[in-house]
Length: 111
Image 1: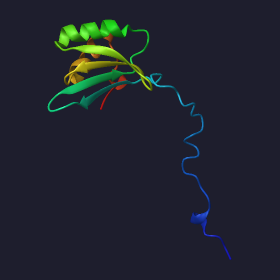
Image 2: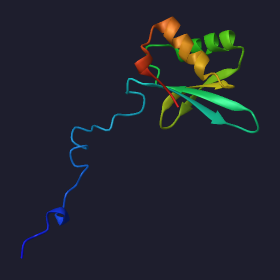
Image 3: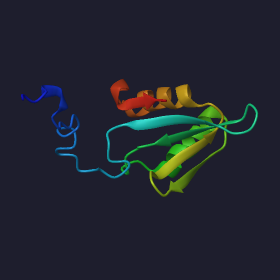
Image 4: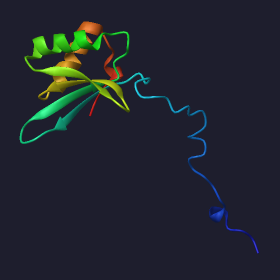
């Protein structure tokens, strides 16, 4: 009796894991700008993935002055240093990074 072709063992994700070095957090070329809901209408904006070449405390100081909000740098166990700002500052941060550091828009991700 002949074997049915589609019942043979086949792993569709076998080639996807080849060359996967499981890079640690922050080594990708993306800057992640996220928003977290607190209570009511209060929100937090988090920025992750900024290279270590930039001083994050100076960036927070510039963000606080330009956007009239409070902010801090927190140490996240999985993502490393993350910038946290009060309010929905996603568009402001994106525009600031594009104008000040001339990042390409493809490098920024908004979620």
